[in-house]
Length: 208
Length: 207
Image (tube, rainbow over all chains, first blue to last red):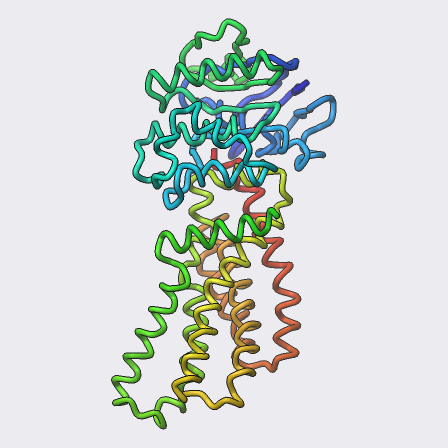
C-alpha cells in the first residue's frame, strides 16, 4: 500500500502543496488534477522518491520510501514529463536498456508489440515524431514490470490510438493489482480512478 | 552487470553522435599531420616536442565532450530514471566515468603506438609514457566529472569550477608516478561522490 501523510513541499520558499495525505491500496488508480504549473509534476516526483518533501512522509507498506529508496525504486516505474529517450539509440535499444537495468529484457518484444512499435524497433528514435517517442517511454511500463506506475501527464502527447492503448493498459494493470498514479488536465474515462485536486492542498492566495 | 550495461550504452551513444574513439583518433591524427607538415616531415624536429603534444591532446581529449557527461541526461529526464533504476547511484556515475575515460584515453594510447611505429618516440620511452598517460587521463576525467557536477548545480559556479580544474590538473604535468597514483586515489571517490550528489539533488527537481 502506498500512502503519504501530511505531505508538504516548498520551492524557493513558496509552498507548492501542504498537508496532503492519502492511502492507495493495490489496484487503485489515482488521478491528480490541476491546472498547468500548480505542482502536479512535483507531487508525482515526491511520490516517486525523486524529491525529498519538506514535511510529511511517503510510505510503501508503512516503510518511509526515502529510507529504502533503492528497494522502492525497483517497485516503481516513472514516466516523467521528459521521455528520457536517447535520439542516438534505436527504439528497441531505448526500451531494452532500462528493462535490463531493472533485471530482464524478456518483455521488450511484448512492449514493442503493444505500442505498435514493432516495425519501428530498428529505427533511430530521433526519426520518430514526439507522440511515437512518448510511446517508447510508455512501452517501458510493460518492459520493466513494476507494482507502482507514476505517470506525469501521459495522455497529452499521444494521438487517439495511443490514448486508447494507454487507457486499456492502465485498466489491465489495475485489475492485475498494480497501483497507478497519474496527472491530467482533463477528466479521464477511467471509472475506477480516484480524483485528487491539488488546489485543495495549496495555500489560498488572497486578492488584495 | 549494471556497470557494464552503462559503460556499453555510454560508448554506444558517444559513437553514434560522433564523439567516440574514431573522432578522437581523427582529431589527434589531424593535429599531428599539421605539425608534420609544418616541420616538413623532419623527424628530429618533432621528437623534441612530441611529449608536450601528447599531453596537450590528453587534456583536450578529457575535456572535449565534458558537457555530454551529465547535461544531456539531466535535460532529457534520464537522471530521474537512473534514480529509479534500483541500481546504486555510484555504479551509474562510475559507469559514466569509465566510459568517458576509455573514450578519451584509448585513442591517445593508440596514437602513442602509432608514433612509436613511425619512430617519432624512442622505444624505451613508450611504456613509461603510456603508464603515465593512463593515470594522467584518469585524473583529468575525475577533474572533469567534478567540474561537470559543480557547474550543473549552478552555472554561477562555472568559473570557480574551471579554476579548480586548473589547480587539480597541474600536478599531472609536475609530479612523478607515485604522487599521481595518490592523487587519483583521492580524486576518484571525490568525483564519484560529487557526481552522485549532483544527480540525487537535481534529478527530481528537474520535473
